[in-house]
Image (cartoon, rainbow, N blue to C red; front, top):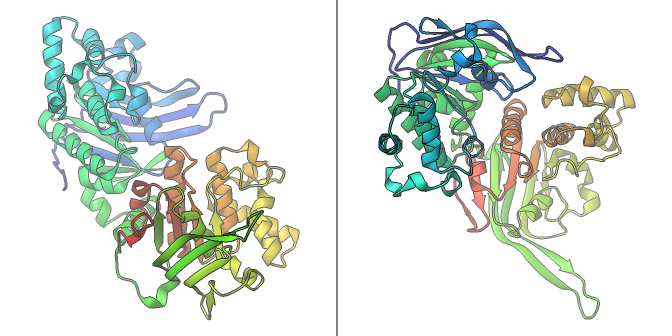
Length: 516
């Protein structure tokens, strides 16, 4: 559903030449940000993580965290220059004229205050003349407006007693309490499942139309932007590089960053498209895997971990295998990498000129073929040698499988680090302990790419990362897949996590393909 409602009126909020830097280093986080918001319109601000979307919008109302500084730019609300106001004068506009809805509702809501107390705080600042019965009545009306009236006496509950979607609806109700004219929604659907996401954006679109709001919708998901927005502004490396109405931007993108975003989006749209058998990379047929467990006394016994499963992976596509702990997900990953010892059925790897029968070959015979299949492990820190600099970890497969000299391996490692979004000059000589978990996972991915594999196995590769890092690594894997035509085998216990990235999903709990 599209919510385009173009209104040819003057902007209610105009931002021009906004620049934000880090105070100590003067590193530029946002440069020359310019945006116009009009009543009745939703303007989506999209871009990759770290492009400056949230920082720019926080700077509009001078909500930047300590250590950041707005050094230039103009913010005009109607005829008032907000940048020239004192902090006390600006407080009158925050919430009442321009409201901000943050990404994480749990951290935005006070855990020791009831829901009614949250509303009372807003009313006390902006509508101190209201009586207690009037405040209660108004809070009930706002909760009803966002679809929370069916929860009984919700006003006396606490935020932790609500689901994530209900908390986000509550934040929207609180943001509307002072009757703002502008609403900034900062990644408000990020941590929600697809169904709840759709409910929230439908609600936001309805509120925009009913209240004639000017809305800035910050998101990394261009699919959502397309559904809800009138206009789209694309941010790339601290700047807005393209602004257009939604339809025109999708039909005639101009900037390479926009084309890249749309390319990733269209890749998702291709999920479920038919593929040819000639593009087959891995084929498992009636595969069973077991392990031999020795005993101190008596004969050893064999335990079957996986039984009679079948799946296929095609060139440039992603297969997700989901299941509970102990269902055999990681065992399958090891088998695909040629590391499982007792296989029944068939597991075939299709190279350009030959077929490798992984179910038949012994470990020594499989060694030359392992360069075609790489693995990214669950714990990125533990997967890297703590005593070895990053560039040597990335170059390690080259040492084993190629005759490159040390200089050539270093050059290759440098290129790989840059390809996964790391600065080799800053990262290459560091130890894993000096990096964040997300950076370590990028290093692990760079190492997995070193031999230009046909298939990459990601064994719970996102589970140890926070939501932001998960999103960043997911975006990275999808861009690498598109660039290199990689096959991805994604092992996960989280079905919702893989829904947006997998062409096919196989459930070990049900032994069925959930998507084809």
